[in-house]
Figure 1: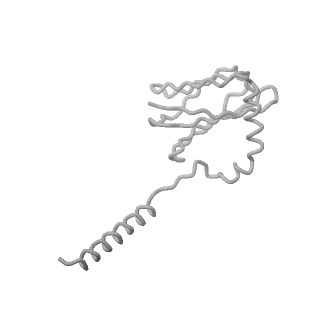
Figure 2: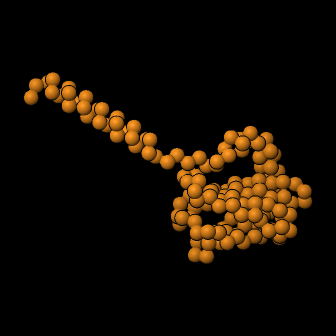
Figure 3: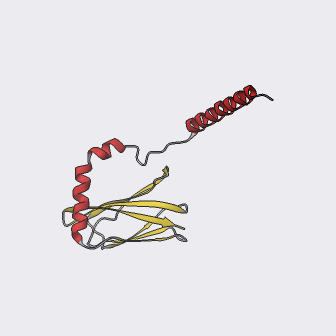
Length: 143
């Protein structure tokens, strides 16, 4: 075999490889963390204020997940008036779960969730206490 065939084979291998990568890229499901991502970014000032309120508390939200019973235990640094919990998986928006926090609840809340698959999750909390809004985001590793 002479060098001409070698060039043709390398060129054909390169084209085949590029076609494979192109087809693979076109079939990968790209999930955004949120469907309303742009709206959420436009509301960043509100989010920053709520996060700042949370930082000023000096205490963090304690988060515990019981995998056997699928119960998320939350201990807030203050009494709740209202709020919500958003459990999301950054790798797949199809697995996201939202829950409303019970109104006028003490600082400890138990939430029965759908089963969470093993892996990395984020828990975003928003609540109101004494008329002041708070926001926190915590990481959750489910084994």
